[in-house]
Image 1: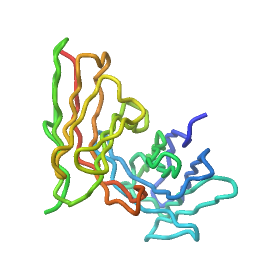
Image 2 (image 1 turned 135 degrees about the vertical axis):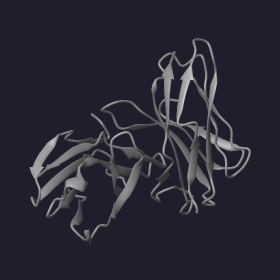
Image 3 (image 1 turned 60 degrees about the horizontal axis):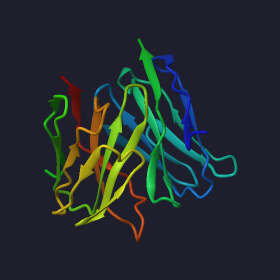
Image 4 (image 1 turned 45 degrees about the vertical axis):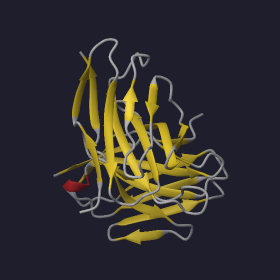
Length: 110
Length: 116
């Protein structure tokens, strides 16, 4: 079983739609969580950190469920420019390393 | 402007050849990392370094070597022992929090390596 698992998608949604991605992690000792965005053939860029109480940044909301060991990313009012791959990233306290999921691809259509 | 610079952007390797990928950062970050990304897959950690003159193997270190002689620089050498080197290589850096790195990492724009 992978340490961090994501549905690779692609998720195809119309502009203006709300879309949610989940990510599960296997290490209960994981301490920090992030969502990164990666455009085609580009480097990943930090989208947002995920805090225990949940956090929002404009149209983006991230939530953490430690009991079920998953994090989520909600995108409201999708824009064409949101089309990208979204990487779930978990910091493993045991190993001191970030573990990357394989990413979920989002395609927003006009 | 602070950031991470990787060079070259594209690199071709001949059979039996070692090649070195450059990574420089002026963010004053202590920790630096090298990842490999294959199509449709997540990033896999090759090597990382949390302090000058020290580095640790990641999950797929075989066929690679690194050095960390300066805080700003963390070059990666892909040796001839790496039989499947074609991939997108990403360098990242982060600040350290306490003894472990749980801060987000910032990435360079990558080097695409191909076999000739």
